[in-house]
Structures are given as structure tokens and as C-alpha cells.
Image 1 (tube, helix red, strand yellow):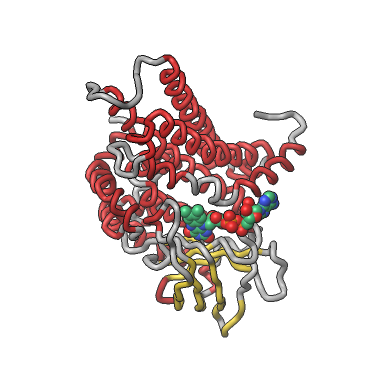
Image 2: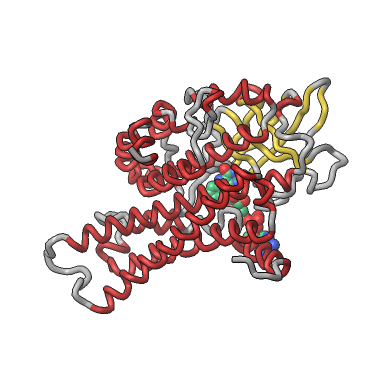
Length: 392
Ligand SMILES: Cc1cc2nc3c(=O)[nH]c(=O)nc-3n(C[C@H](O)[C@H](O)[C@H](O)COP(=O)(O)OP(=O)(O)OC[C@H]3O[C@@H](n4cnc5c(N)ncnc54)[C@H](O)[C@@H]3O)c2cc1C
């Protein structure tokens, strides 16, 4: 049995996907957080995918993460993002958490008891991952904080939060710490709502968190956050996002092709037309390019995890991971746009179409905004100037 088949059977993935697929139109239309889907992911063990065996999990790899993320993305992109971002937070705790934090949190994650939300965006610093405004303070032996974020996926439902904070009141904005807090260690106050164009089920409304934690809740306090970001936050983030976006576009394309191959009942695109075949080939090429970049990034990152994760800090690897995010976010959206052109008004543009292209289009519109592509293009351009050999 290959790894994919093994994981499918271990987590009964097909029944989870069936439920997620079925609920997707309602999740989108109602903009309700998909609590039942999260429950299915918890019960199946998939919420604990990245937890090592020594803490009660299956010890999933980066390629396992990418594989499941892509399948979930094809079923419901909102649910896929909720799960994918949780897995990113878990992976950070696995690799940078203190032993006390790992012992406390990871077995509960493996049991499906703890779903972790990500709190990195901040009103003042925006999508700038490497800086923070709200600062850690001291409250006796504990570290205190007041942290607000305008966008937190599943914040109202989360059992724990992983947040970026400035190291102290006197620290610079670049002196960032990553801190974990259980829900019962914080007071959570909602801020604003979530009525978005797409990704409507992610319930990514703002919130503020106030509380205090034991210092063992800080991830790798002796390390620079910049390094943690390059070694883990960015690679796992970009790989997970690219996987779910590719899954969504690929799922939409499968549905479109199935619809086009059905016996024609009049109307719709002419499958014998050369122009249509040209359009189909273009879409397929967009997806193949993203798939190739994704596989390359997964392979490089898995090698780095085996041989020394610091190699992810090299300029060519930073460009590689940024390129994946930039290309995946833009080309999967472009592919679905092209599919709508192929499907026309009835199949493409119609929200009630049998092929859910409109939902995929609205959902994927968020991809370039997630960790702002504008910012990422310019950061990547700066790195390009440093890579004199143009190492591809
Ligand atoms: C569906 C979804 C879910 C999300 N979930 C979470 C979550 O769970 N937790 C979380 O913390 N965040 C989350 N985010 C936030 C996300 O990761 C980004 O931080 C956020 O979308 C950035 O907001 P912004 O577009 O206003 O960018 P900002 O960084 O605030 O920038 C504002 C504007 O300035 C431009 N800009 C900024 N810097 C530059 C630059 N250097 N060069 C050129 N232009 C620049 C940007 O393009 C943008 O137009 C989520 C976002 C989405 C879409």
C-alpha cells in the first residue's frame, strides 16, 4: 500500500471528504463556520496529523500535509484553510515548543481536543510577519499581553492561539516572539464580523486577546523569530496554501471536464471547437506549473528537515518558497477565471451551476491577499538581487 492509500485508510479520509464536499455550498452561502467539518477532522485524527508518534500522533510529513490539504481544498476551500492553518501552528509547536509546552498541548491536539488559531496579522503591521506591535509584559512570574488582530480564521472556535508579540515594551518591532495560549488563559473579545467575497466559512473575523501565560509558552525564546519564520512558518504556510489552492482549482477543473464529457443536451460550450481545446490546454498548463513548483518545494523542504532546516534560510530557497506562493495564488485563480470563460453564463458564471466555479473563483480571489502578494513580490525582488548565480 502506498503512503497516500495508507493515510486515506488510516483517517477514513473519504468519509471526511464526503461530508466536507456535501456541506460546502451551505458553508459558502451561510458564511457559517463549518463546525461539523472541524468535528469530523478532530474525530478522524486529521487534526493531529503533524503530531509526532512520541506525543500520540501519527507523525505526518510535509508531503502528507500537502496531500491531505489538496484533497480538502478540492472539497471546500474554507474548511481546508481552517485545517491547514491549524496544522501549521501544530508543526511550529512540534519543532520550536519547549518540552513543557509539547507535553501539555500535543497529546490534546492528537486527540482532537485542541484546534489552534493563528494570530500574526495586526492592524499596525498588516501582513508583515516579521514585525509586531503589541508587546509582552510581566505579571509576577507570568508573561502578560493584550493582542488584537483584524483577521483570525476560526478565532471564535479556537481552543488555543499561537500569536506573534513584540518581546517587550522596549523591544523593537522586529524583536518578535511567538507565544502559545490556551483558550482558558485568555479573555477573547470579538472585533467586527466576517462578510467576505469568498472563504466565507472561515469566520476570519477580528478579535482581541488579553491574558497571561507561563514563560514556557514562548517558542524557542533564544532564537530569532526571523529564522523560525524562514525555517518553518513560511515553508509550511506557502506549501499548505499552495496545496489547498491547487486542490480547489483542480477540483473545479475535474467537475468542468466531467460536465463537458456528458452527452450534450443542447447549449453550452462546443467541445469540438479548436478554441475551446486551446482554452482547456491553457488551464491544464496553469495547474501543471503550480503542481511542479509545489512538488519541488515539498521535496526541498523535506530534504532540509532531514539534513538541516537552516538551509531554508538560503536566498535561493527563500525565493523558491515565495515563488510558490506567488505563482500558486495567481495561477490557480487565473485557471478558474479561464474555466468560467469556458463554462459561459450557465455553467461558469451562475452561482447555482452544477459546476461550482463561481464559489472557487470567489474563494481563490483571497489567495493573493493572504500574506499580501504586493508585499511578497517586492520582498522577492530584493532577494533576487542577492542571488548573483540565479540558482533556480
Ligand atoms: C481568508 C483569509 C484568512 C486569513 N486568516 C488569518 C489568520 O488566521 N490569522 C492572521 O493573522 N491573518 C490572517 N489573514 C490575514 C492575511 O494573512 C494578511 O495578513 C492580510 O490579508 C493582509 O491584509 P492587507 O491586504 O490589508 O495587507 P497589509 O499588509 O495590511 O497591507 C495593506 C496594503 O498595502 C499593500 N502593501 C503593504 N506592504 C507593501 C509593500 N511592501 N509593497 C507593496 N505593497 C504593500 C498591500 O498590498 C495592501 O494593499 C487571513 C487572510 C485571508 C484572506
